[in-house]
Length: 346
Image (cartoon, rainbow, N blue to C red; front, side, top):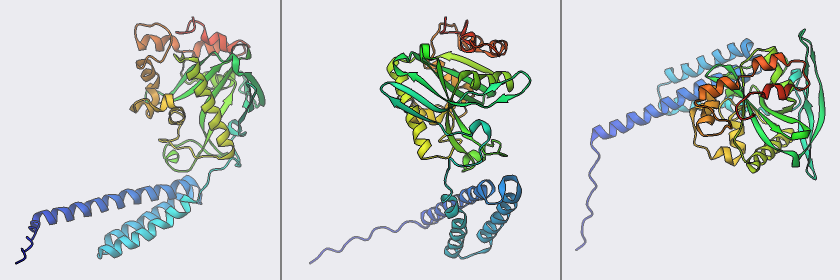
């Protein structure tokens, strides 16, 4: 005689109802977040221009999406209609591609690339703008070569234009008798565009690895814009410095052939550098990598700077270069002048 199979006990009604409510809640949260994202995509990347016609397009799209979610009572039909309306935005947005061929503002007009031939690095479209005290700007793009055997170290400029919340890092590679090559990872903007955080979340800006002369990159910030700038000597071995340099060159050349969009979270001026090099990538995440106004403090806590000081605040005060940069505006030895009496450069 065969044994009867035992029936599994049915789930209590309260559990079933609870799971149903949780599932419905998750779907509604997903739809809400996706709807807000899509409205932002229409506003930022729509065909009529940000802050003009795109505003009305985004409002209209959002109104129809919300109306569909509230009016349609049959759940499967509501989700089907919402999905179709969401795809109206998602599909064309995914087809938007980055490009090196746009009407760029002068400071981002040229796309850089780097050659390495038997130890000689040649930077093409190397920016070397000159800034007159009367406000005139002389635009110079050139090729400049450095002997890789002369690489001595790397310095870090911390441009605290947004106070303790937002800053911009600039790396400067010291090639001794050949001078210094500076790298600034930036949003590449077209004529008529200005930076916005919401634009950086979508496909408004392209990413650019910009190489140039220190006198250009630093003077425009200290002397023209009057942004606070701090200079530190990094505590890195020759091999680590070389890895960062070569990884930066690799990304520069990659962007020359395969442009990429800037993203305020995943591909900005700081996270791009952290992502490219294993020595940086392996560092534990810290919120100051995103809200990078205190990134120099984070590096100090990791013993990343040369120079003995009793506290970070003392080091930061001594690293402030604006008065020296402004005094040396016309000086050919600008780079040496701004390093005098700085921690790690004695």
